[in-house]
Length: 348
Image 1 (spheres, helix red, strand yellow):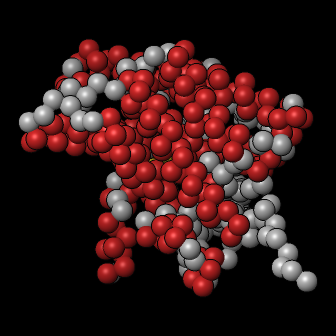
Image 2 (cartoon, rainbow, N blue to C red):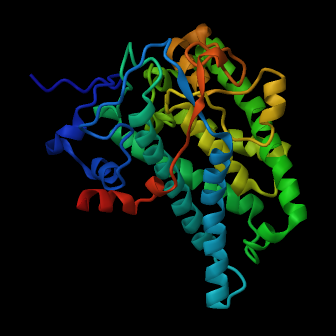
């Protein structure tokens, strides 16, 4: 008898402690220390009635803006030192693709470290799912595809290579960007809501979304874990639809905010917190602000027509405002976000 093919729906994750099955993609996750839960660690477990800390909102803005502005400054430095007017398009794609991956992996590292401090939602019932043994290649490939597709789109649609960092000193541009960051996320969520709701409510479309819902307790690396059709819509169609609807000049910065939100929503961190946005005050007034727990609940109950939160409209269970410890604010550390930290950790 031949070997049975692996169950592609399995979420079993044994590979982090079994190096005998490692391939290049397993080693990539290890090299960048991009484990959602570092091997050999155990996050704290809390009852649902225990108070939760809150994510410090302004620190999220600092984190996103630091990572968004760094490649702009590097780009400008290359132009200045090289005494050149602009970079070739291919070089720009490579630079910002690296920056995009640096940011995503950095957020995974920072969230993983924070999770060891504050724990995860529903942790008293079920631990966070890991990266499936059958899905390591798909998870790593999804990161490259998301990076490549969005960066190519960004370069083709909004690239001005003559002075990438000059806008950071233009107060009018910064004021416009402040508005764009908030409006861009709302416009994107409009398109995402329509497509996402359709995936759940239209039987013919559910087959393209079911893989993403195999996990009931997702982690950051499973943000883009999906079938090819959903990957294409998530990575290309929705950002492009948003750009054509609302042509944000600061597209790169707006995308950094969106990506932060996508990864945060799959982190499962046990904290009361909203994604950073310049329009959070407006969403909060309308009762439409997104919390980490909203999308986590969507994964726990979101099969077919029981999805609850398709965009930014649900109520909270574990992170209700009456259960928040407002005396304890938490945040992502910038230092833990760098690739080199893994080398220093190993040396230590």
